Amino acid sequence: MKRKLKKLAALALAGCMVLSVTAYAEEKTPDPAISEGKTLIVGLQGDPASFNPTAAPDDWGYYVAENMFSRLVKLNWKGETLPDLAESWEIAEDGLTVTFHLHEDAKWSDGEPVTAADVKWTFDKIVEDQAYLVSYLGSVESIEAADDYTVVFHMSAPDAALLSNISFLGAFILPQHVYEGQDWMTCEAATSAPVTSGPFMLEDYQQGVAVTLTANKEFYDGAPAYDKLVYQIIPDGNTAVQAYNNGELDVLGIMAPASQIGALESDPGNVVVHNANFGRYYYGFNVKSEALSDVKVREAITMAVDRQEIVDKAFGAAGQLAEGYYTPAVEWAYNADAQIPAFDQEKAVALLEEAGLTKDSDGNYLTLSIATFNLEPFTNIAQIMQANLAEIGVKLDINTMEAAAYMEISAEEDAYDLFAMGGQVGPDPSMFYHRIGTNGTMNFSHYSNGEVDAMFEEAAGMTDQGERGELYKKIQEICAEEYLIVPLSEDIGINVYKTYLTGLPYDTAVNTAAQTEMTRVMFTEEPQY
Image (cartoon, rainbow, N blue to C red; front, side, top):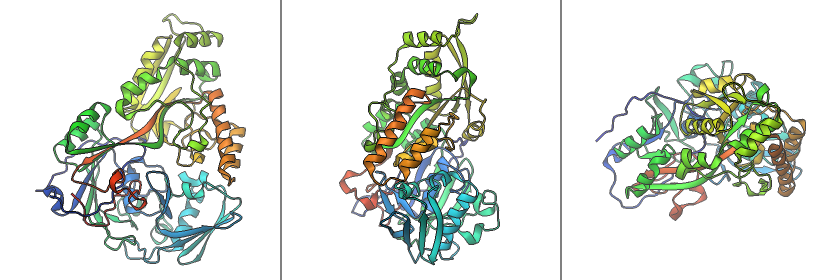
């Protein structure tokens, strides 16, 4: 019995983390739709932007790239660093050199060996083209390919966050012999024919339909037991749940709308696991907007929006009210005293009037715009904010758009007043720089504060975690004073998959470090049903 992939329109979204799978064999009745050809089908909410996962952020492409490419090191779902292409590494006592030892049997999908030259070229290219990861490599002075399988990072200063930063987004190693001399965004390897080093290789891609991967039987960390891995692209969460319930998906992933979670949990054929991630959902203020230049106005809007209502209505079981300006999942860096002010619309109106605003003929103090993705929960967030703000005399126009258009206008200082966003701020707090740092790649607030930038830089060079934490806590105090962003909900990953699959990272019965690769779908032993 073979399942046909349905063609569905594709949308994109700035998202967070999902699934990782490692399975162990035992005697169970296999699902016939999977065991025939050993194909695992996973839901994915949008198309990859490209097959170059290092040049630019690519939220949906990340899930696919994790299974096709390798990094030096990788993360598990707890935020711990694990070996990947580098099987071991050591950090010099003074912190000024970090030496990685590569798997000597790693190969590219075209048969060429993966070497230290590829690693050096990739990181040099990131710096040369100012790619996503570059703001995290400021302490890297140079990278040396000491021999074919030894890479040395020479540091200008110790960097406590280096391993964490190169284990996440934008750090996939690319083949120098394929990319060199070409535009790494538009060449064939980036658009349609990637040369890869991970557990799977691209077999076929139909935009808006599916990405089909085939197993790399020579993968250095062990061949996957699944012959094929299919990411079926289903932009709408309700449609994805319907496909999952119809047996067209084995893993729903994180695509379940809040309203569907109860029904999924009550079905004995499903496993539904809630686990906290290092991401958050929030809205933010464009501080370059003339209407929002006064901090009192930003404070008033913060107090006028009912964040608990947003969590209840937009997230439901998938939400948890955010209390502070950084994720409490990184406990040592979290400032519990830097709190978001309580919902108080009467005080909000008083602040607007203190700022010198008066109502117009329509009874509005202000008319503002919010930019947001055209997907849940972002559309719900914007609609609740619109209703809340109307109650204090602030008209909010909602501009919904696809991810590509959203990212394009984010660079324009006059394109919006507020924005809705989500994404990772961990596992290392240095990643928070991207959201509020002067040159942060996701700094849609257009905020710039030399003191904040200096504290991020100083913290990155510290080796004492307690001292680093104090600086990050001071940064959160400034966030509380400046009203740049307003966290709404912690990112609670709700992962849904069929009970005939076991050994996933959320399966506490068999949860080990080796099983908890964050999004890589690696069954290195016979799949268990």
